[in-house]
Image 1 (spheres, rainbow, N blue to C red):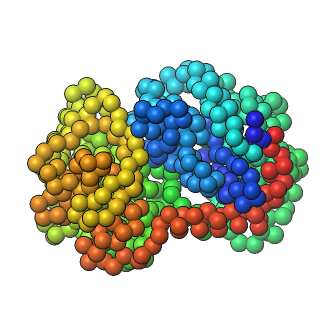
Image 2 (image 1 turned 90 degrees about the horizontal axis):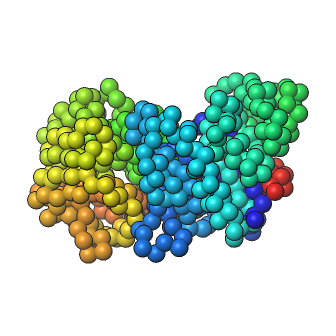
Image 3 (image 1 turned 180 degrees about the vertical axis):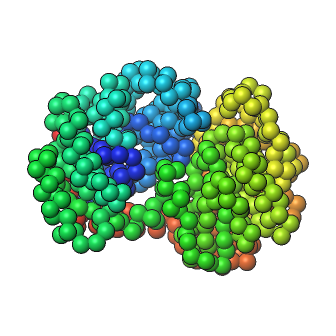
Length: 491
């Protein structure tokens, strides 16, 4: 079994995903065969990964974070890198994905009782990930200080103690209270968990780090833990795909540019990293519009992203008045792109006769495409290579969706995938829908698409930009952390 080290946070959104990706790239640069692992993830931003030994399945779902971390390791993503993925559908319930496949649905309280059964899958995947590796870097979820959930935990100390993986605790100084969060974690952890922690690091520091010297002394006094370093605010992290919807408010580009792209922040928004390649374009401003705010009238393009609850988000779309904003946008000659759930919303009707998504079984669509969608139990999960019809350019992406879409506008598809038509285009070419995630990541397609909107594309190699950002993050970590000491703690 490979040696392993785990990063756990004093809370959510402390930057564990980027730190693990950066450490994976730093280990790879040392010539180590390194792999990422996250026992349990909660996100509607999913990627399609291989299911080893399953040649008849199109692929399985994992969190986008582990997909990115696999890239940092220079290896293909596997479903075993994230054996349990929770995809929230309501405020109290989620779809449960186990080793890439739909396991079922569970309300929050029911899921706690389910965790004991899921630990077997976690440990099975854990063994598989480490089979051909020198080092596995594990990412926790939430915080080990959630001691009210400890008895059934599979994501933090419950996993670390079962798998005997040492832990580095991550504190986020940007949100304040980092001394108390680290010292408080030490105070409330039971001794069995506390002794798994081999040290800590501070993340997201701004300014003169010497000003925190007394803070480090205070943490040492309270905990006795060693500090592996203080990481500055990593600017390159902004060029990496974001996984968690808690960061949406920070994702707008902010600067006025030639093309404004408005993206409504759906309640169950999914795979919003589809917009990252557009954000990287020098002449494109991407604005994520929160509930209660109108879609900006000066937007040249509106993108309706994926959704984990198409009918629910469609109803909320109307409640926000975005349907009226979208109609006005179209009257002004504006362009619209709908991806996956957003594609389904653009049609005349969405039907869910089996109640797969919830109690509402049908909803009138936005009527911008002459199509209808019927939800079906079988989920399509696959990586795809395709070719765009309007722009005659290659596409690479993936599909994760329920539902079958048909109607006159599908006779004008966006793409051809394995000889089959995908998506729909309006008669004037200004409204596009597709089930294919990742289409804006195809550089030539993105350039031609922007040209159709009167914008000159920047000729960016988006995948190369992600690789460069990973290298920059790794270099920063090697400068500010004792990476060799962290790796030496692995066992």
